[in-house]
Amino acid sequence: MPHIVFDKRIDLFALAKNFTEIFQKTHILIKIHSVFVEYNGLAALFSTVVIDNMHQDFLIEISTTKSKTTIRLYPQTDPVKTDGVKLSIALLSKYVLSIFPDLKVTKTNLTEYITT
Image (cartoon, rainbow, N blue to C red; front, side, top):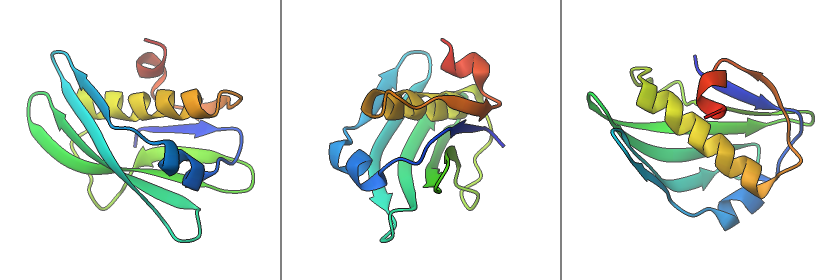
């Protein structure tokens, strides 16, 4: 399962308040267009569309604890893990880093997507 883990807790309400649609159109179309934050602020879901070899609608989840924040695919939507799907997670992580620049990636299996 593709994921990115950061070293600190983030404020998901602040992230949602500042959220603007993420749109990329190259040979892969990616649109992350809305966010829903859980009432306790421990999880958020981002509605995502990726069109590469296929059209997929799915959710990306950001969950946070006292010591870390994780970005991953929401398991109940389970899209095919294409390059576009993996790139969408990387794009969301770059957005998170733009809001919280002091975060550090501590664990990921998407290194080639977040370094480009």
